[in-house]
Image (tube, rainbow, N blue to C red):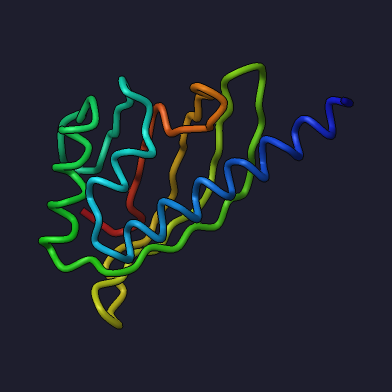
Length: 130
């Protein structure tokens, strides 16, 4: 398989995992969101400390749902991979009902575990002024 084909396969797998994440988000399923991270995954949300592991990541997403977030959209701008690691850079938009709640950019580090691409590190930066 050529390097270009491998990159395409990784992009497709990450896009599928992203769809699963967005589906879980729209269902307000914090457990489902957290399950798409590696066992030792971490998220670095804005205005909060690092959350490590499924339980802490689940709590971050539950807080988002409790704050009224209902929808999440992403625009992946760049994906590159090497072996069992990949990174993704993109933009996100979050909604609370019909209202725009937040928008910004993100970096995800993906890791292949047991044949599945999972989020290993999640860094989000809002475009909103402080």
